[in-house]
Image (cartoon, rainbow, N blue to C red; front, side, top):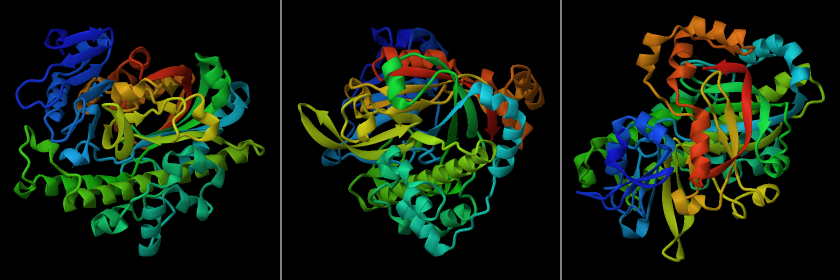
Length: 474
């Protein structure tokens, strides 16, 4: 992207000035190098989002932004239901509530590395991964409805998680307002055997070492100790979320919706319409599906670690989604208003003092879990108070792709990537050599630059850098 097309506000803030049908400006948070590396579609899509009815303040793009469906991935926008605000299935994404959880092992790298190969093999056998992967759980209609309504609480009640986790999961582990009845039979059928599975694409389970502490007081509050090991899980609502996204995008794109759009991929419906409410109910059910799925995967990881380290507990640091639309209270024009905040490939990042955080984290801010590309570093950040004003308490969610999967396949071999990472002491296990090539580290932006830009912009601050030891890849 040519920086000359933008108005530079400061080192990491760039504006697309309103023109044409734009109702508000679009703002991109990134340094100049990241801006130059962004595809031009980010400019077009951010400007298009700014044309949608009821949008408040601005359309935002995070430092990891890249081209997506309708909204850019890394896009954030809030809509006011009292002023014709809309909900957009494309503004949430297909993998609804794809998100990250990080668990603390309390083990040192020296304790884990002698068992690295055995631990990797056991995790790979116990946690189904890959395209169309299925697990041991098969849900009947009643259990499916209960899972969609209760989220991680459903998993805990069935012995597939631990009650102590719930306060460390967004929404207390259960998204209110879910409408299981709004999920189609096809969506339910796709999910019937997919609970407790990673899926494919950029989903993973990683065993990581805490390589560097950047913010000592925050790290202490989060329980992070240099050279100790954590487990991070990245996945979402699997086939069910994709089916909901597909079906509602088709329905919202119908001419009866009556909203003029610059791009049909921005298909949407008024928040207070029957279609908008039905989508929100189905989307919230998919959020619960993802929360339950990550809780089950965490349970499986605990079971594997308990085999090798019998006294290990794996305490949950936090579990947070991207790819959601949340009704949240935010300050606009001096008063608090309910807004519907779309975060597509962006993470909620509540700052210190936010009432939505558990007491143990409130003084520090929400853990913001940033995955790097396979084989590179990841980060744990803490939400900043300034993030509410900057982007509705949002931050980046990962490194962000720098090239398409097809381009990555042309450039890299999955086998060579596995061998190269093994030479660096990183064990990769995946059912798909093609999937490994698609997720090559070189296909992503520099995650260090992304999080540095997020920090400079006041979205979230760095707490710790992680390096991978084992990666179970979908």
